[in-house]
Amino acid sequence: MLFDTHAHLNDERFDNLRDELITSLAENGVGAYCEIGYDIESSKKAIELSEKYDLIYAAAGVHPHDTDPLTEKDMETLKSLCSHKNVVALGEIGLDYYYDNSKRENQRKWFDRQLSLAEEIDIPVTIHTRDAMADTIDILKAHKEAKGIIHCYSGSVESAKILLGLGYYISFAGPLTFKNASTALEVAKYVPKDRMLIETDSPYLAPVPYRGKTNTPIYVAEVAKRLAEIKEMTFDDVCRITFENAKKVYRIA
Image 1 (cartoon, one colour):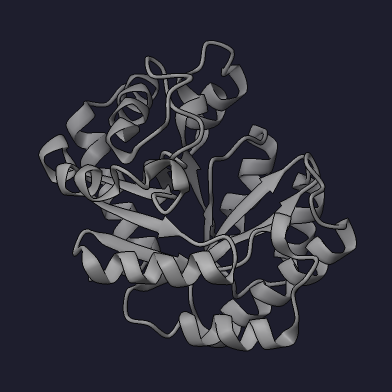
Image 2 (cartoon, one colour; image 1 turned 45 degrees about the horizontal axis):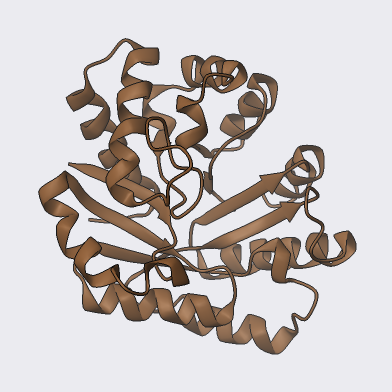
C-alpha cells in the first residue's frame, strides 16, 4: 500500500467528486494520505475530513502565502487544532519567494513562530520552500528540536545533505517523473532509503503520464515507480519503505 504524505483534497476542484475519490483510494493501492492545511480554515477542514475517513490524517498550519494577516491569536488557535488526535504534523509552513504572496519579513516571522510552536508542543512539521532555500535552512538551524518533512523537494543535493543532517525527511512528488528532472534524479539517488517519502501535492503537479491533469493521491503510484527505477528497487519495496517512513515521521503507531 502507498502513503501519500501531502495532498489537498479539500481543494474546490474536488467538490463534486471528493467522497467518490476518497472511497476509491484503497482499491487503487493507497492505504493512507495526509490532508494538509494551508491556513486556519483549511486546517479545520482537514481535521473534519480526517474524522470522516479512517485512512486520512491531517496537518494544521499556515502556508507562507497566507502569513500577512496572522496574529498571535491565530497561533493559539493553531495550537488547539494540533491537539486533535488525527493531526500528525504542523504544516504546511515555510517560505515562498517565487510568488511573494506575503511580505518576506512576515513569511520569515511566522515560519519562525510556527517552528517554535512545533517545538513547544512536540509535533513534526511539513515544510514548503520555493526559491528560498538559504533562508529556510538558516531558520531551521535555529530550531534544532523541530523535525519533519521537506515536502515536494526541489533543491540541490548539497541542500539535501544539510537538511538530512538536521534530521529531516525528503519527500518526492510528480516533478521527479518529469523529463527535465535531472537535479531531482540526483537527489533521489542520494537520499537514504530510510529518509525518503512520496507525495502528490494534489491537485497540483500531476506526474507523467498524467501531467496537465488534476492530480489525485491515486497518482502517487507513478512517483513510487520512478523512485523505484532510480533507487534500483522493486516497486513493492518502495511502497513498503515509504509507508513505514511516513508512519515514523508522523508518529503513527
